[in-house]
Length: 117
Length: 113
Image 1 (tube, helix red, strand yellow):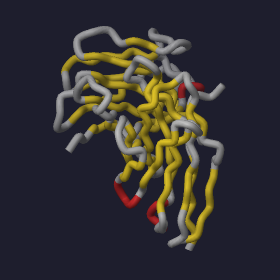
Image 2: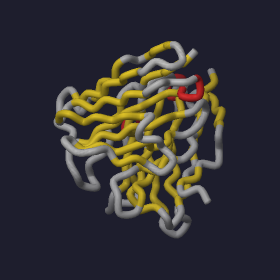
Image 3: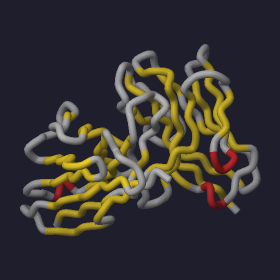
């Protein structure tokens, strides 16, 4: 149980284009979803937290106009990297939590490797 | 200062040998602690968690961890490793008063034949 699917797993595109990444909870309803960015050989950096039906909360230093997050339903959140540039190349990972509570772990997707040429 | 510290960036160990991956946390995080494993080009999989109760926590794949409040540590151990345990391991804690994870920088475990 607790499967989170992330799509696409890999995307390569030209500088200036926008890229959308989907995160779906397949067998549970996710009240909260998180988006992380992971640089090579580095830890995960939380970018934003999204709750279904409300605006995402971005971490300090993360450009909300650059990284658009939509959490339209209890099973789907999307991250759109707008006007992507080479410095946006990274591994993006989403996670989802079924309910509030300390005992509710985050379940992670398999990540999306974004390469901007 | 790093809130969750993993001092070892890489740990090589021979197959069937025991291993310990170190994790220390600071007072800026809660004592709700987690260990995750990440295989290449994949997301993170929960190994185990400490929320309260017994300080020795057993997880999946034969891993266990011990919460030590006096040493502010939550080290991960396995008595006998397999080649398939080769992966990146992340220690994490909940940020005080939130459900947000603070991750350590990760330890790459490389199991040698």
